[in-house]
Image (cartoon, rainbow, N blue to C red; front, side, top):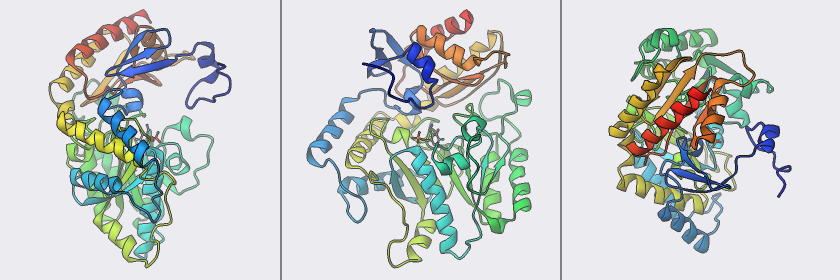
Length: 430
Ligand code: PMP
């Protein structure tokens, strides 16, 4: 086998090919590599395998679907699983987020939500409301819409913003909040910037605000107290939609079904993916409230929304998602991130403060980041710690000067102890 032909995403291809990390199988909290090494998965893959790896019940559901209904188009045709899944999601979601539009990834969910926002404004006679406000350090996937509203400079720098977008400042303030636990302060003050952007651009030109309730790839930035509530109020005052990108947060990552419920703020739309099928079959969804759905549907007699994917509501993905929901509910996993295991991870993460070079530790539920002092080194600390941890049998994520953890929700205290031992060893050896 040659490693030459697969152009790997978000990868330093030349480096990878010189020293490949090849995964062979996975079970529960562990990966097994081609040389037989066992690796503790503290990232749930790419924040997605919330149920742990290779769950039999999910595998069987996918297999059953592949044998009985391998594919069904979702334009003008239905199959029962997609309707059952939409109903279960609507039941779990806050407020009247009652309609599910299915996609095959988080990026597609974001682009779909942006198009729904614009279609909604057109349907109600406010076609001028086109602009989107997002946030510095935001990650909303890699499609053109998500890139246009993205706030991480390396991800956006080669692409002119094709849509009209302005960015709220991010809310990370290490000087004032270093090593804080729970929600940092100063939320209302930071959200007030939205008011200024609305005055600058004019509410009549703004369709929506999109934010991750907790910025994930930007470095696990926890919303300061009152921040999301104030965004909600300003959006309401100015007739602007609020979209939460919950691709990372939904499905129990923060201790409730969604971050919206955890922080008690209901958006007008919500994107989700990842935990929806626990990473098994690609799937995303946009949850849309009654007002948006009814406005768009009532405005037309024919097809109301010219949008959809060949693999929207794919039968295998729906079967996987339904099996996953059964497990989440049976094992009470949506709230697990806020019970003992989440608190224990918090303690263990904050103990790292005693190591030199660490300037901040942030966590919420089963999501955490450790930030190192920036160094004059071609290889950022996040990548150095990531590489060393891998050698020590631990998968974490490197993101610039930070490392990130987002383990499967099934982890036990013994896994956190193993993580603690391996991460200390890895950081100390650097
Ligand atoms: N939104 C957020 C908040 C994400 O973290 C991600 C993926 N990490 C995406 C969107 C894109 O999801 P996908 O990679 O499934 O396209």
